[in-house]
Length: 422
Ligand SMILES: Nc1ccn([C@@H]2O[C@H](COP(=O)(O)OP(=O)(O)OP(=O)(O)O)[C@@H](O)[C@H]2O)c(=O)n1
Image 1 (cartoon, rainbow, N blue to C red):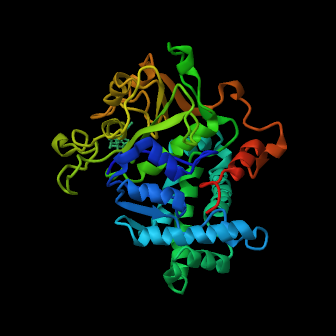
Image 2: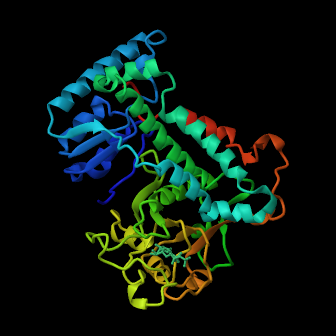
Image 3: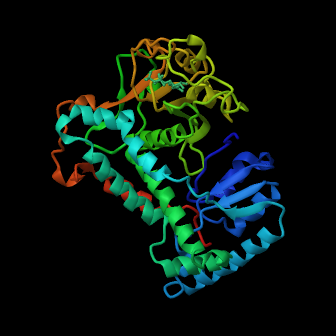
């Protein structure tokens, strides 16, 4: 499977319309994933492009289908549109279905426990030995609250009514309804746990590492919230690893010269990957041992494809020399990958720096520190505030976790996943 694009709605266009503009008839046979059921404006074009499957999150984040009292005309429109969507669905070849695979047992617990092991949490914990990792729990609680309000509908009756209007009455009876809500909740918990592993905490963030020779434009760090968002994506990918021990995720974005229309500002998705054995291989085809195993022949390192290598191989866009392209990796790039990243023309690396400068038996991390010509940003305390872990403004913190800026909050709240009527 290869990801060919990630889009969200802009002021003028819905996410589905943007996918259509960006990819045109290349959408043929693709699978599309929506954070809500697409409206007829998007669906008719997508169906027409010949897509294979459309999966959507079974909720309506704007609750536009429920605002009958406050806004009868738009609710009427929303209901008409829901009917049109049903007709498009039943009369088209594409499979239109609910996006929800129940998670395997213990997955939520596994992710919650392991996400504290990521570099980003460990660095903070090490810098303040007395504070243990409680800040992780506080940060996770904040993310849970935020994502629940975005992705779940707290009132069960209202959720049932929305499902009915969407043509999902088969999910409104128990135990199906409660299973559906539990599955949705589990995914929210997974997302919140992973997001909390790259926390908003004090003056920690991605800052330039070392004194490097690069051109000025490439030296500019992304806003911290954008960098964190992309690293969370990479961290989610790391959970797909085929390595028993170490999961690594990587995602490449680039910045267009002109501002795009796809709701991601000027940034566009280039590719992503995680560490795994060659495509098509079966579980026992290759060795899985690490370099503590004496017999070198049964170690994994000569076989496993690194996260950055998969992101570069399965990218959907070219890396243009005159655009600022950036890779986000959850671990320090190793000596095999550093020349590949530079050779591919990537301008910025955002990474954790676990193992940086280490020479292990079969994998080394020596070149990252010496790398010139690519800007490197690693997770650390802001160099301007090295001794200032505490905020001067006490209102900026809550349970030890920095609160999101109110302006960001407002922008986030007003961002609709699919603008306009349903
Ligand atoms: N930037 C990186 C760094 C490592 N890896 C992957 O991470 C694993 C190796 O991780 P590492 O921690 O160096 O070695 P391990 O033997 O797994 O663990 P240990 O730290 O105990 O040596 C390999 O699958 C390698 O493909 C990767 O994809 N991208």
